Image (cartoon, rainbow, N blue to C red; front, side, top):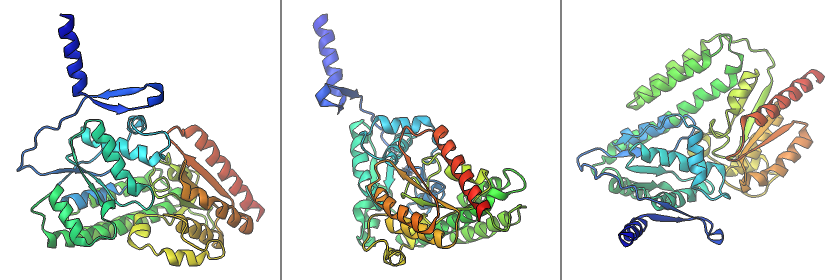
Length: 396
């Protein structure tokens, strides 16, 4: 009987996938393979992206109207999301890696067949391969579209990959037409949000701007073509513009700069934008998918700050420095620099930002995030920063 139990235990162990932990300490973890149920070959493929600010709206449009597949909508992230990502990541990777990995795990739990990673301007471009390896090592069965592997490749290669992984009957003509519409959607989303950042801090009715922004986002989610996008954008801007505000002639103005993921994604930066809007500040952020991915002109940005840098320092470095210099030249009251811990390009930007601050007198608050960063300390620093720039305004 004992031999039978031992053989049964050994059999189960052999069936498990072993993920290496710290070999030096003898720590290992066994993960049972998670076999995806065989998919009906006539069923539509379920595709998921990671969470990234409000851009899930454009990701949904891309999946449904370019790939002609079903979009797996992720619910709002929770503490569990980051815990899942952190538990299955090495400590030295940056916080965005952990956020995205947690998103992918939850997407697979919701039945996603395909995960999508797009080309990132930094280590994000390598994340897809590493995260795919981790997820397969955990026992998940799925397909991966990693557009980072196709950077600078012809459009035909993108089409070939999408047909192979997602939809063999993909219409190229329809896909190209709707891809252009998706670009239009990105521009519209970023345009409306810029208006929101500049004005929501002065709303007369609490919550009115957030409510109208939500309605605009709902209209965009329902869009099926470029005409719907144009109409939703016009109606959304009109609705936001009609809201009552009590904005002073010279409001406190703060610019946001920093790393590609953390500076944009509200969950990752613990809601910095909403916290500052709640203090009655006009916010500006140059970094968006539109400015960084659709209309990025790094040499032109670098030329704006030629007295500070002579070459491209990294994925968002030129934009970070150029934006900070613009804000200083335009008389902004301060800048907040957001990055994940260990983000080398943005660390390299900090001495330049410090020089801009010294030469122009514009204060800069530096915030660095990891998976352990909490709201409590962040709130204290933001409140102190606000008090300081408000006091400086009275001294002018």
